[in-house]
Length: 450
Ligand code: PMP
Image (tube, rainbow, N blue to C red; front, side, top):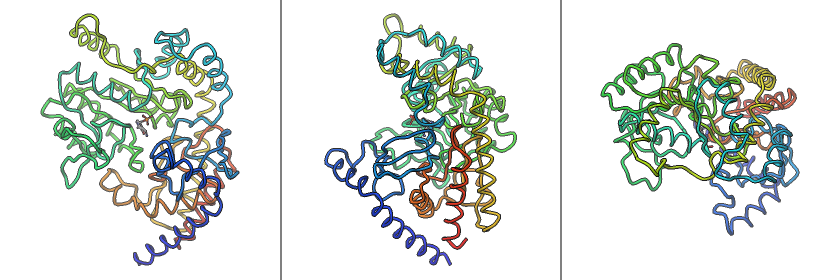
């Protein structure tokens, strides 16, 4: 039975790869030409991690659709893996960015928009004091560094299966019950398991035990795990996480980079979380590289103390592009004109339609699949019930099946984010696009004999 399924998956992949190559001559030719100077034919290695046998070269994005250089039109449920979550080519962001770039992109000085953005962030997310970074990875690294600085503790704690960007400290997983560095962490010479502790998500007892030594500076967590399939927190988990971190004198960093799909104030506002640090990147500047992190007044005061200890003439480390005029102009447009309640209402309604459609496929064809979502971010899981931690999810994440589904969708004009089955609904995704995605998933389930 398993051998049959494996054979049919590899047959399907062979057919779909041939179809892709035949239908994308220009993308294939561009990748070949680009390979002379870009390793693997693309400027960033993840662009090669899609299920297509050669990278798709994008020509343009409009709303929730992309056209490639072969003239193929795609319904885009990847949306750049979140930076374009509110749609491509938004007119307000385009106008703000065009206006600012003519007047200067960066001065290493604040602009009038900075004052407005700070106020908008505080009002929306509830934390009073903010700093900017260039990527969510940078923001998380800054948060970890400050947490260690203010607590004087070396350890950070993450959940198995987490992803928080290019943050070396977070690349520690549970392997055979113990911590291990991820193989992807090429070139790391320090044993990060000495200063990163890792526990399964939803395991309150393991969390309590890991905090008990009193050496954990911060827990870094997504409120819903969205980078190892999607794993929802069980009832009571967030309350326990906050209570236990407080009791242990450990800071709580909530990374909302993906879960901003929940609603206008992220998962934090929707569920009344009380983080010490709130991190947000990707979509916050509509695709202009930018991120922000907010802190409580109490933590800010401790940061002032830590900074006072380093003496005059030094203010710590940073990067020059962070918080520049361009990023501030884009964030201002996003926060005031794009990430509106009305936009969220459309995204959430679209996501409900997608969830219902996918559940309809499962009900009709009866595969052992399930659907979970955090607001406008929807995941099709190849397991039912959906896993409650990464160890279970790894068993469910059949990489060949994921690749086959993704390539099947690409060939039918639908893009979803690589790596697992995550689908983002934007405010400009129309119902017809959602229905096309559902129909394509149904076709895949039928082809798999589900
Ligand atoms: N945090 C989370 C939760 C993420 O999913 C990601 C990226 N997938 C990041 C941080 C890093 O974002 P960036 O790639 O913009 O640095």
